[in-house]
Amino acid sequence: MEFFPLLELPEEIQAVVVERAAHNSIQDLYGLKASSRSMKALAERRGVYHFLDVLSVPWGLNMPSELLKACYDEGNPSTLYIKGVQFFYSLDLHEEGLSLMKRAADAGYERAVYTHAMTRAIFEGEGKYFDGIPFESVDRSGKLVRSVKWSWGLWHGDYFRDHKVMFICFFMSSFYRCQCANLVQRQCHCLWHIDVTKDDNMCNRCFWIKELGLFLRDFEPISLLRVTRIVEENIEKLMATEFDHAHNNEIQAVVVERAARNSIQDLFGLKASSRSMKALAERREVYHFLDVLSVPWGLNMPSELLKACYAEGNPSTLYIKGVQFFYTFNLKEEGLSLMKRAADAGYERAVYTHAMTRAIFWGEGKYLSRIPIESLVRIGKLVRYVKWCWGLWHTPEFKERMALFISHILPKFYSCQCGNPVERDCPCLWHIDVTKDDNMCPHCLWLKEIGLFLRDFEPVSLYRDTRKW
Image 1: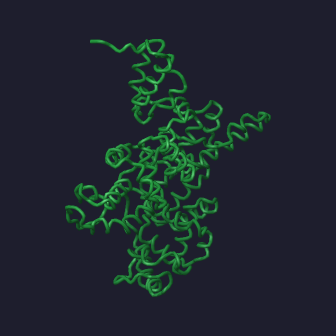
Image 2 (image 1 turned 180 degrees about the vertical axis):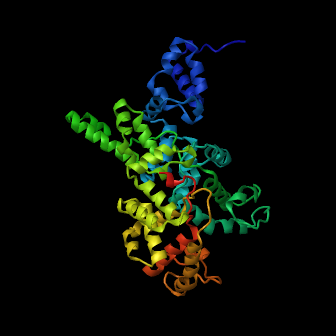
Image 3 (image 1 turned 180 degrees about the horizontal axis):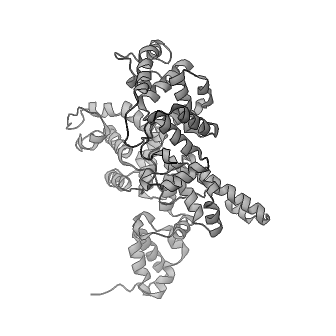
């Protein structure tokens, strides 16, 4: 068998071969690197990092952060894509994330072309970017994007959920009604059957509705395996500035506290960066700033750490204990006091839950004014979407308050003609969030919010018994 005399080619050609190998897979690159000294030298040039597809590298290999950063510095499209997805979907930095995804798409990175087009269509209603996806490659590119699981992380944000609900409400029905292809009749017009309802002869519009539906159904937007942003943008500048040692320690301590407040991932990332940061991050005072509800429960946060957070007056643990005392153990005075302490510390979940509790059980609406009106929807969803694991049902008193609200207060919401109301045969809690638009009067706005709290809030938190704290 004859071998191609690669080493006899001009060095410029050899360099192109190495770049193509890197673009193909890391296995090909390392195989070429091991073949000779000259290939090893060419493969170790920083310019080669531009061509490496880091998503083709199994994460189990634990790709060094320095290599990822070096790839990003070289304008590597796959790292631009990863950072763009994380910025847009995980960190809610929509403008920066979209810009990074577009750069990766303009560089021809297949995953980025697909994801950028889907993102534009879903969040901005711009379908023109679909033209950038080769039609014959749509199915393969879609599966490539949706099959990547970004390791453990938070759930989809409210921004994503809202657009998903909007898509289901306005587009799904038209997909199932269209008779463009051999249609399987479905009783439930939902996303779960969208890929097995019509054959390949569907019209162009239904084809793209199906693709958008699959993206909304299967795409996991969280990439918390690596944090692609610096926790504090000016941290290096602060450390490089010629403060005296005491002043510098104070600045570092503030940065660590802000990292703890932001997320446990940022705190542990900072903790791993240096010995001095590790020492600052392990101070007990830092426990005051950690939001324990931002920690995935699957990590099984140690009880000792929760107790230490509570001992430091951590607002999130005050809130958890207050909710459990009030709603589960029927210790109303103690529970309300704990929720108020957390609310006074500015913990937004506590501000919302304390105000709702006061309004429902004591008829005191004055605390509702403490909830910023522009954040009402977001905080409400944040509180109601937390499921407190297994536990008892609502207490009889809670059920009585709900029945009282339905019988005496809810009819006023449905009888008021503000906000273009949709006529309902059953004026109940289940339709309260889809009956009026955003132009409803302030009175109905708060009635809707209280109704959603009564309908969706799960008051039981028996995952941890906080009486032991």
